[in-house]
Image (cartoon, rainbow, N blue to C red):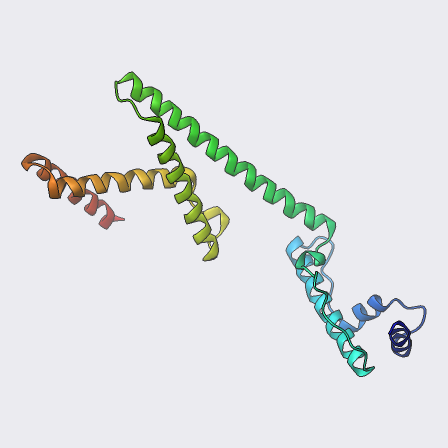
Amino acid sequence: MKEQLQLALASLINPDEHYIDYLSMVTKHKRPSDDADDADIDQYNIDLAKSCVTQAKINLIAEDIPFRKPTDFTPQMFRSNNIEQRVERIQEKKSQELQMQQQIRKRRLERQQQIALQHGKRMGKHTQIRMQKEIIEKWKAERAQLQKNGVDESKLPSLEDIEAKYAKEKKTNRSQKNAKFGGKHTKAKAKRQLSRDKRREDRK
């Protein structure tokens, strides 16, 4: 098999010419300038590699040499070390931002608990943990869904946005229950609150 491949390559290119260099030349892809964006360079490498593989495939078929795709192939193999390091830095930065937001949320809940204790409104530990988990899970789920839909990273909701949305939903649910099951004055107050909320939403 190795001898067949060597014979095939010898019939295609000069003995002193590197096979990949040959493929790179025959694919005729225009290389981006040195000051081009990393994304353009990355795309160039991907297109060039695809063209090289296509050309090699044509040559191997012409020489009747069997071949198959590597099972351990990944797109990351196209990236240069600089681009790979840049991607890792971005992912690390996102992870640090996520941890920071979770810590901010935790500290805020702790402050709220202290204020509630000062006013005699004790918040149970299990309730606090459950609320914190619910908000963080809602935040992760909403971000994941928006990312899946192709929403830009800068437009994804922050932990504070989900917290405000969570508080608003709880308030609305409470008003709806009061409007349905509360006493006379409680029902009237809840209906007025729901009406105000609806007008705010309509104005948006």
